[in-house]
Length: 419
Image 1 (tube, rainbow, N blue to C red):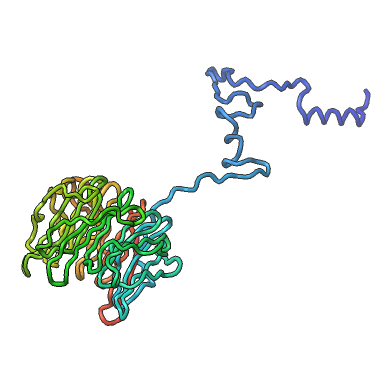
Image 2 (cartoon, helix red, strand yellow; image 1 turned 30 degrees about the vertical axis):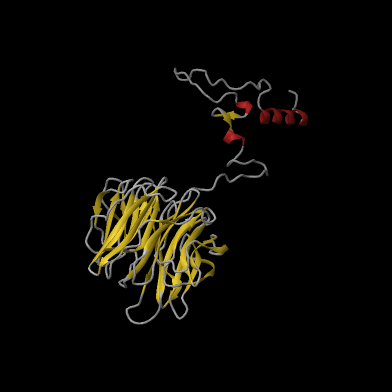
């Protein structure tokens, strides 16, 4: 017998390692019946590098390339609402008052006032968790009125009376820095009872003019997107009554305006007017059927009708749903004085508080009754005052003030609740 040579042994090993010399490169037959049943596959040719009808994982792993190529992380994960429990802000003052809270690009803009030796207005930016971002912005002196604040693009706008300068509109960016100079929209002596609403292409503002203790006349004025007046002021009352404390909302086609009328010391009522975009009155609605002592109206809109809030005898808040023409259609009585209301695209949401009672958050869907979303948001026994509310597309941010029972400055707090 011939002894195997080293060459033949090496060749045999090569054959074993590589397989039979009779092997072909034809793909396996994925349609051959197995165990009596037909086997089908959508894979296509295996040597084409395709599986499940296409390239493996789209030809790349995790949306990128293999073997040292770049990897695309894809779109960011969707934002979700995260609840933030009551958090104390480094915003304090002996006479601290919250004017407004609006959602901006990546957080919130808080506008507030300090009534001290020198009354001043300020703005500060908060992130989604309520942490202060950047420096506090000084927005100038305050006469004696809380500013009316609305969202304006990536920032905010507010109207308030300026010392020796009349009523003015001020616009600020998302950090609270003033954009341009304040724009005077009401004459010297304008009432401090002004209100502001944002439209698709500008603003509507209401205010009253009169001497303290005497009759006041309510006016409306239309502004463009920069805050410049586009027409003279339109009177809404004749000046024969003491009309003041205005509120305004835009429903997409009309302005709703509410104001308070003092008839005598024991009788005060709230009135409503519907205006077109130029301030022309569409209704001559008399007083809203109400208690004889209804005050301090607030107004919001769902894009059709309106939600009117009032204080009744200074001890309870009343909400009244109004139709698009201003007709009352539903009366609600939540706990709280002049509830702070926002529309989130599907329902009204409002915050209420009253003396020693908790700060609660409620929702009001169309043709429904209020449902409590969150109870005791403040989480403390101290009286919560002056709540302001903002909807950021995912959740509801609240800012309010609390004053210690004995001494100390008033302090602002922040919380965030989810639907």
